[in-house]
Length: 370
Ligand SMILES: NC(=O)C1=CN([C@@H]2O[C@H](COP(=O)(O)OP(=O)(O)OC[C@H]3O[C@@H](n4cnc5c(N)ncnc54)[C@H](OP(=O)(O)O)[C@@H]3O)[C@@H](O)[C@H]2O)C=CC1
Ligand SMILES: N[C@@H](CC=O)C(=O)O
Ligand code: NA
Image (cartoon, rainbow, N blue to C red; front, side):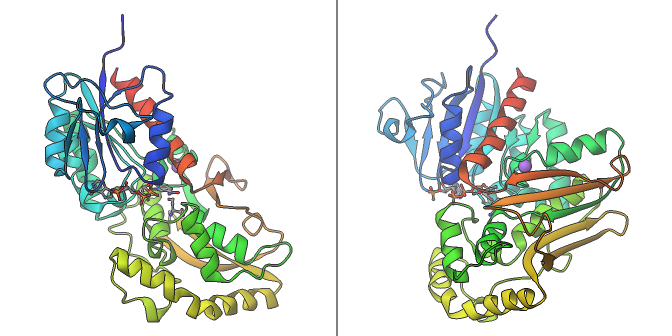
């Protein structure tokens, strides 16, 4: 008996989306890709057959094919209605960082469309949205997987969920949660050897490597880390109301804080950042004078309900100081694990490793839906 068909809508074809589509093309028994959208364009498999599907590997070439329906940007509700009418279960993969789309997850889920995403916005915004997402999933008998929202493809959420589900008591979670900030500090202020790199040049490099958020200020202002800690804290049982409900140390120079959030604002920010290199050099030198290095870290003290995000100095021979590249390190302190935490470590940003988490989530969702 052949497996029942599953229909797939994918939104976002940037660094993560492109890597995801390449991985999808190699899935055996892959779901039928029937929607592929970016900000200005949508490809659809024609109705009512929802066939032919969009070829994941060469969607860009196939977008010229007359067999596919093309349109401009569609409203999320329109995509939800299209997927809900497919002749089988459907899954939405959101590879954008769009909060408006994330606010529509309940619409998809109530219609029975499962959601798989690396987009952390929806899970770290108002607590009411978090609750709505999971209540809507239960109502629509749909699934939600978002492993890559924390630690990219690293098994961070699945590990925490397993600890909680099996009755362990998680007391503290701490570590380095940003691939971008890890790369910036490991490169700018290495624990061994020295570096002449300017802060702004390393920021530009992190953007080029695809580690940053679409707007790198979301990494530098600490919000990306705060969002990840909000997600972890909620899974650990804390009702964090919003990602800005606790103190967050920002690395954005005060003079650049009021630049617009548009793409023009990003360009202005990147152009003017070199003017402020001395500020970060001072922080690096202060740590150096104490024989230490500076790193950007976060922690959740579950019993105290306290979340902290910001800079800290570390001994040069510590695990955090010695991280390489875009590595994250996340330590789970629990009753069962005692004084020696369960540690997850590895690349925490980049298209391929993030897409791996999305693809693995999709495989899990497909297995449960078939
Ligand atoms: N990069 C990384 O290392 C990691 C990223 N993530 C998350 O993965 C997600 C994607 O990141 P990344 O690929 O780097 O981002 P990119 O900026 O490279 O790509 C974003 C894509 O989303 C599309 N898009 C944005 N808004 C909409 C919308 N409203 N409707 C349709 N399409 C839209 C863009 O369209 P267009 O092509 O038209 O511009 C683009 O294709 C983000 O949520 C990020 O936080 C998570 C972990 C690690
Ligand atoms: N911009 C983020 C990407 C992954 O979430 C980071 O650098 O960690
Ligand atoms: Na992860």
